[in-house]
Length: 343
Image 1 (tube, helix red, strand yellow):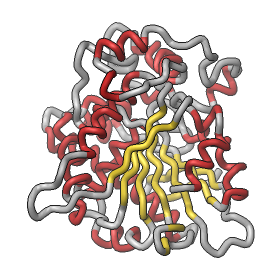
Image 2 (cartoon, rainbow, N blue to C red; image 1 turned 90 degrees about the vertical axis):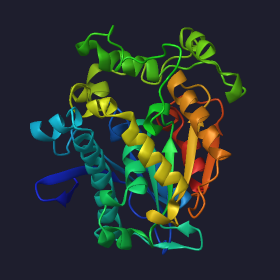
Image 3 (cartoon, helix red, strand yellow; image 1 turned 135 degrees about the vertical axis):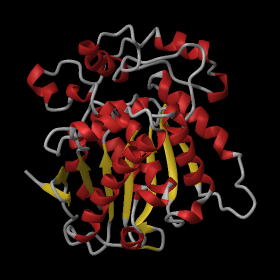
């Protein structure tokens, strides 16, 4: 089982497609999974990587299969009454992801970036956008020495389907989702979340048309298309999900929104503070649930906003994946790899 020791007593499980044969330079995509699902949901990308000149490496966050669990003390920090303690816990997660990228650059010895190609692209799915924004949004998340190592390699961060709350936004109109919904019993949250997140919904023609009422109505009527993991056996599904994180590391959702707002504002509108050469691309899929459509709406608002005087706005792009739900990496891996080739 491949493990990266990123700190004393902390190891991260990962899977690696390997370097493309006979390639001296190539792009390495480091994938960080989202909530409840683990890196195995991206496993179908790995066999496609080499033929497209890519190296794809998936990591499992702490608390997920194969990686070091969080201690009770660390978990308690996520719900501390002290907001700064919570913020430190969020930065710790960002620091763990950054340390894994450091491992990829140094121990796995991937090529550095050259003229806008090669190097490393950090691909953060959904909830893990919180960790990516903590890296770019607070210099305390990483040391100057670690950033100096990453700078020649890390050229882009992709936030794939981030919910609006990862930016510190609050949903309107009573919108909720299974993990946060008090009406869903704790022991049913993981299964309810997976069914909801892996369904297909009506395509979105224009972000501006999606009011909270429209999003709620859209979510209430998923399409008859089979959900992404329909037909898997319980054993197969168990390889993809870690329901035990509910009530543990998933509590990062309950941290103070102002922490995520601060990280977002610094990451996007004060680029010179941390890794100024890194660009950000936000991708959303038009048949995903309301929460990621809402995230795209939040980002659309950032697109026209300028940085304060004396600060630099980070290069930011917003892209849509047509006719796909959240789990395009499972349902259509080759199609997603084609997207990754163009990063």
